Each structure stands twice: as C-alpha cells, then as structure tokens.
Image 1 (cartoon, helix red, strand yellow):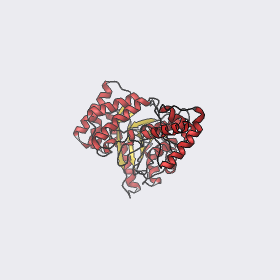
Image 2: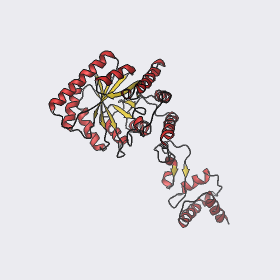
Image 3: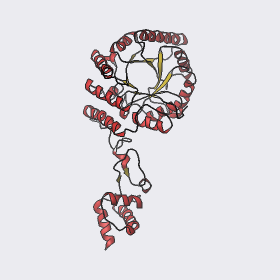
Image 4: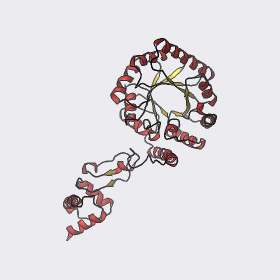
Length: 375
C-alpha cells in the first residue's frame, strides 16, 4: 500500500487530545502559537478543541480558526464534537474548516438499529454540508479494538456511500491492539472503500500507539492522527514527529518539513513547557525518543562510529563495554592528551579499572590512568 508517490494527511491533535492529558488547559494565546508551529512545519489539519464542552471553549476555538483565516494560513482548522445535532450546530458556529465528529455504536445494537444510526449520521452530515459546503467532515467510529469486525465492515461500506463524509477515523480507543491486528483490520477495511479516506488514531495504553499508527498507514489508511510528545487521554496517542519520520523511511510522504529538526524541537519544547508548568511532568526527559538526552549517550564501542537520532553533542561513558574508538572519542571530546600508540593499552586499562571500581570512570580516573601508563 506504500510507494514513492503516496502522500498522507496529518491531523495534529496536540490541542484537543492534549486537553485530555492530565487535564491540560490551553489558552487562546497558547493555541495560536501552537497553530503557528503547525503551519510552519506543514501540518495539514489542526484539531483546535472541543467546542461543545463549554461556551468559552467554543469562543477560543472560533478565535483560533479566525487567526488562521485572517493570516491566510494553509493549515485547515478542525474541532471535535459528538455526532449530535446540537454539537453540529456548535461546530458550524465556530467557523472551523472541518467539523469532526465521534460516534459509538452501543454494544448489542442489532442490524436495524445500526442501519438507522448510519442513516441519521448521513442526514446530519448533509445538514452540516449545506451550511458549510467547503467543509471536510470527519467521523470517528469508536472503538475498532472492541467492535465486531463484520459489524465494522458493514458500517464502513455504508458510510463510504455517504457523499458528505470525507474522512472516517478508526480509533483503537482502548489501546489494546498490536501492529498485526491493526494491519489486518485496516487492510480489510481499506479494500472496501472507494471514496473515503481512512484515518488511524491509536492510543498508547500498552506502548503501541506510534507503531500501530505507522502500521495502519502502511496497511492503507490515508490520514494520520497524532500529537506532540504523544500527549492525550491516559497514556496518550501516537507521537507526531517519530511516526511521520518513520513513515518517510518507508516511502510514505507527508506535507511536513521533517528536516526542520530545529523547528520541531522548538515546537516540542514549547508544548513540554506547558505540560511541565501545569502538571509538573517533564516529557522531554532523558528517556524521550529523538529529543531526549538518552539518545546521544553511548557506552558500547559499536555505537561510537555513527550518528543517532538528532544528536549534535554526543556523550561517551567508559565502563567494561567500551571499545578503542569510543575511548578515543572520549579522550578527544574531553581534551585529554595521549599518545596514539598507547590507545590500545589505555582502553584495556580503562575497562579493567571500571570493573575494579564497580562503576563507570570519570575524567579524573582517566587522567590518573594515562599518567600511570606514562611512568
């Protein structure tokens, strides 16, 4: 389902899904700055909030959408609500480009009830489209990990015939699926649609969100839903940069400027500052993929010869696993003079010294080793 000419759309849900992460609240100023980051980096759609929750939330979303419109941004704005008439009216009133809806089939709903619900959805979308002809309507069907596959297939086939629906999102809302299950489910459903774009929205309860999202796109989905640092309900959703970057390595294009690592780092740092201020959590800590400090630290010699992640200033640590090239880089990085002919001996002494000390060695330890070897 890949190929060099295939390009997908990106829905950045940092704002809407992010407000479900430990109860974050984004001000208008913060949403506009995040919107501007998304515009700069080439995101297709900004899901700016959940207007039906509160009148003031609706007003902030309205002003965010207005900011994009007044400044002639390329990014489209979206907002989420339930697939109900009153929520649809609220979304239309915010003047976002794309109304997004979510809908859940209750367990035990029979075929007549399913058919009736789908018919009502199509009628709702027709009313929205009559008011906003240029809107791209999206619907999230909850939850593919717990929905009977045959029932889900029937819903997808029926909704594919609804002319006013543009994107059908298939969320693993419970975060219980693994890549093989996502691949099988999306492959089957992608083979049934002729008009709709399928979107993947995967939760991270078992740490699979980014991998599941990537797999879903490779299986035929055409829209990726993700957020900065993967923030979202419970343990979050797919990470925006990591997933898109890995998709590019598989031949899938996006409109994002993935080579603008400084821009992404600034975007991630800004969102993380809001998270830290409001929750006390630092999500760009040592273990954060790509942007954390851990990716630039090396011990084993085989890791000393190349670049990893977005590393600019690698750090090397000396213990019994280090090799000659890593020791050389450590000495050069720390401006420690040595005779090149002694490098092999220095390395062996460092390895033994670390084992004897029961810890990694520091600069003073290494200086003493080199001084002792020179005597």
